[in-house]
Length: 179
Image (cartoon, rainbow, N blue to C red):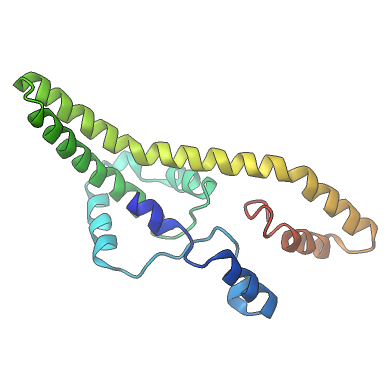
């Protein structure tokens, strides 16, 4: 949850809208592109935990999945992998405490620890899948309106490039992923 909060854009929609209206260079940043906090202690901890992840989790496929969910930041892969490793440990400890508190036999305690580690390790993947599915749905629902607006702009005399820019601006607040 903490790593997901770090990936959420910091500015509110009102601030983004006012920056876009004022014409500031920052206001024309693509929506959904998040800026992470500076290299604070938690970010460094996640980066260290990412080095403990198996090598098979690194690569372009993961970067593409994160981009599909709207997380384009350079550190998003490290934070994602670090959160998987960190939540694996936290889940194992939490389930170990639960098993110990309920006075389970040692074999069942080991099973609980294993299940907690697996659950913690898979939680960021579930969040990633859910976010990308919601984003795909939003794009699928807004695409007909965007195409209609594009046709209207081109028929009214705008060139294709200008029409695409215009549609991007118009859809910026209603459907940022499509914009």
